[in-house]
Image 1 (tube, rainbow, N blue to C red):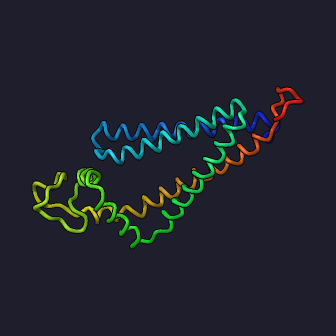
Image 2 (cartoon, helix red, strand yellow):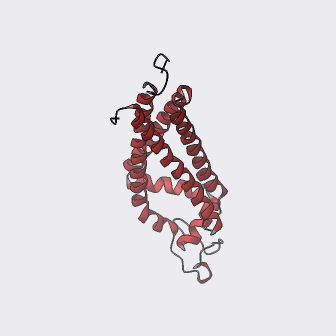
Image 3 (cartoon, rainbow, N blue to C red):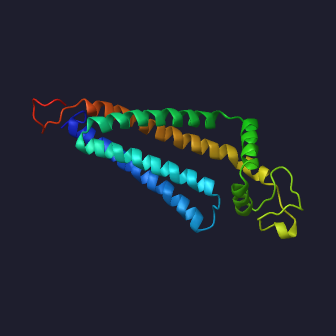
Length: 203
């Protein structure tokens, strides 16, 4: 059977969805690991990671079942949802790579001011206090706080922000192209006839 045939399309779609399932379980596992080792105490951050992992798992499960059963309705909804995810992820990846230094710093400061629990995790893990200014009267979870000899977190975060955004944008681009590949495979697979089925049956 050539690669453009029914069996190859089915196997390719199954492999792609198994990859998505592994990535979703990895996301959920990383969130659980972060809580277990005390690296993340923010329920919002953990909730977002777990929600994204569960959503990806459900989408991949629909695609996997649809591919195995050659189910037209499941494959149709899978194709539409995967295309919407591709649009969102591709847009976010482009935005991550297009941000200049000033825009990065503004977004980081806004995020710092609106995440109290994540701020505590950052101070503890990066051993820093405050964003642009270290107020010795304000409590801080960093190990340097008792000596009152701490650097600001803004300086440390901004040093690595560009690199992190490049990595996030690159990973997002990679997965966005696997998603558009999944949409194309699903579209082609839906319109192929199962050679083992009744030749007079409709798709």
